[in-house]
Length: 296
Image 1 (cartoon, rainbow, N blue to C red):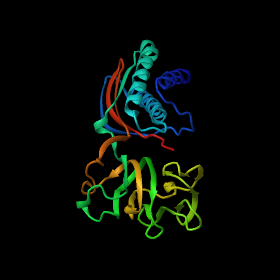
Image 2 (cartoon, rainbow, N blue to C red; image 1 turned 90 degrees about the vertical axis):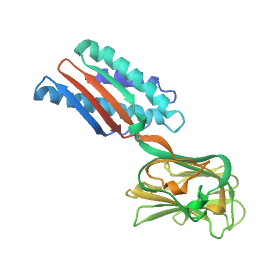
Image 3 (cartoon, helix red, strand yellow; image 1 turned 180 degrees about the horizontal axis):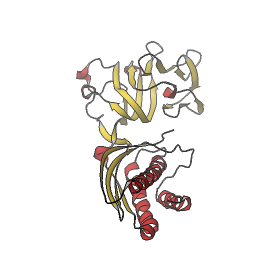
Image 4 (cartoon, rainbow, N blue to C red; image 1 turned 45 degrees about the horizontal axis):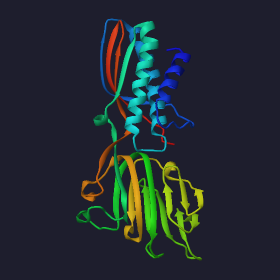
């Protein structure tokens, strides 16, 4: 596919997205989950097909990154809409000219990722299923290889002793983030690895993926978990010392014994799986690929 054609496909696919975030995008790498091919061509046909697939799969990653943006809600619908437009434009441009037809659809059941959230009534950050073990110190997830979002808001902050702490650990290194009342004056502090980054009065908002925090009208950024090598474990200590809401979506293991209504484990395509079909004069392809999305 020549450069201007590929640009046209991306442009039209991108316009179809309700919310498009134009930022620095790292082209995605994809991994085939299933792979089937029927061909009447030789080695050169297979080589051309591989080049075509690599180009298209990069485009699928770009569209996924733009479709997700900063908002988990509605990602699947935005991405499916973009895939439909990309497919339609590809077949009109390339299919009409070269006889190469293509189809791509989101396969949610084969996608990787889980979401948990406490987004309704503000509650303590305790283990959702109290029968699973200690309520205040618990594992949110372990063997986490990728995090799409981790947003937390605390509207009630407890005492300065035994402070609420979120820990991201990779086995040898911990990244602790604590939310606690200020020991000097009023207000609350956000402390990361022993250093205070945010201080102020009002609700505390933390975005772990972006490495940012806001307390009232005061905001700051910090070095988040990105310097740690996965896999991670994500743990909460002293979950009774703060109240609020959170949303966490990642690829990892979310222990079933830790979760109960109203905090449920649900599938979320952190790494989307795409069913891809190619139909050319010399070959037919059916593949399911995992598309790596750049989450920043």
